[in-house]
Image (cartoon, rainbow, N blue to C red):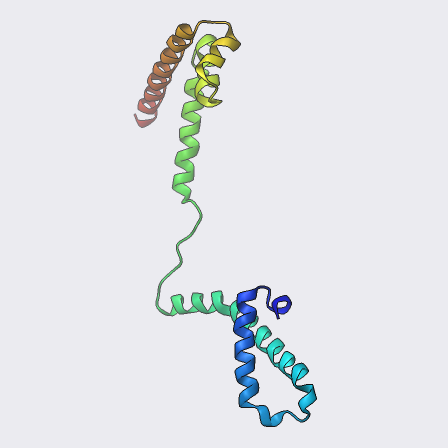
Length: 155
């Protein structure tokens, strides 16, 4: 039954139901030596019925919701939110492009690629304090450029 039902818990439920059904219909058993095969066939049918009910359960739940006038919430991100995210990415990309080469390198490594400060300084052959200074300047410039672009778009 585990093989037919797919898991042990369902198989146990099916077996209990099959035993109950067999007990109620024992008078239909013609040969007592065929009991095991008869019980297995009952259990197999119950398992298939159980699987069909499970397959139709989502459809039944949807029709119940429709009858009640309710709708399932969508898992998709709303279109206006997608557009806003796309615009925000464009603003950030534009602001990053407006940075000086030196500041952009530090900003991309540290904030976008999340490389440690020590590693960024080592890669660029600069001191840690110089890296921190460039990163601070890049963050300020990015914020200013982003704000200017937002002001320009809103006017």
